[in-house]
Image (cartoon, rainbow, N blue to C red; front, side):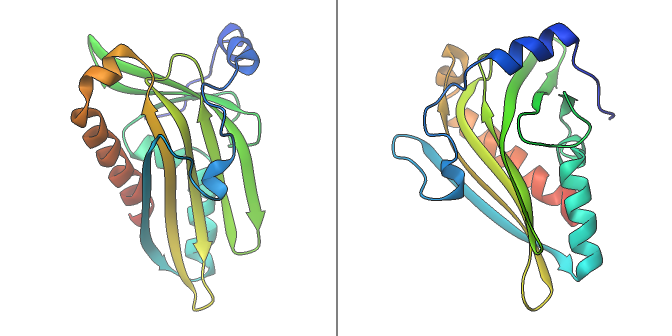
Length: 178
């Protein structure tokens, strides 16, 4: 799959939209109560080249594309304030998930970003994606999220919705392990 551009109208609407939750930035610290919490981590290799390639793939939306999502971002690389619409499904069963990048981390051995949900997303909450090179050279990919259903369909999905979230998270982790 390839990135598809947002229309100028959609980009403008999403940039003006408010996040659908109030606990902005909490994936960087203590996750807020009242949400489903998720944290997964995978070793993706070792060394500077693995770290550099992992960061490049993450910031160019390749993790999301390789996980099988449709990706329509406002910018070719994830940057603070960028908006993106992620899509999953086919035919009459499709979900659209609008998000805004709310923070970017850029340290020598720690790079990543988090996005928060916008109106139209089936969930409300935040998800962070972090590539880290440890002192021993090991490179890990961490995903941290908090979310709860935001639509009637997501609420009705109940445990199936959580299973889908776990499945997509596993696909994200595998996208960098390849």
